[in-house]
Image (cartoon, rainbow, N blue to C red; front, side):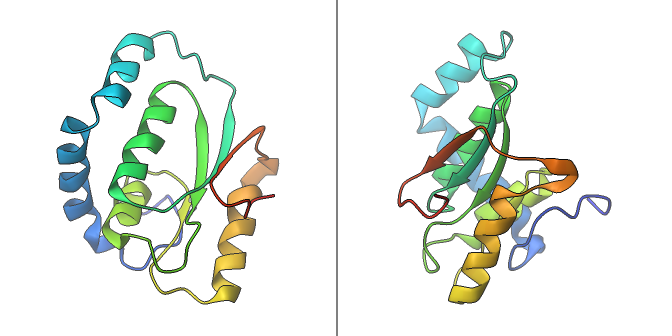
Length: 137
């Protein structure tokens, strides 16, 4: 984890708890698990660079990992300064998924997170946006 720094979360030490919660949520999200099983090998989202801005919850983490399993690259932020589940964000960061979210961030920090989601290292830019509130646009 020491070489991956493309994230900002409240406390990375919550990653283990987040991972356990993600594993439980996967059992309750059979549609996404079926997509991974059926299309994981064919990588239908290969080449997709998705900037996401949804509530950063355990369920969103399952979605993020599904998009990646289908071939996409993702960068993520939360659409709400109060809705982030910090252990979910930590689990994504620990999995080396760029995520910029923590509960209780200021408006200035929120805007910084949005910028980090849209503009990645080495000229990374999204070619798809998944956003429930229009914050990325």
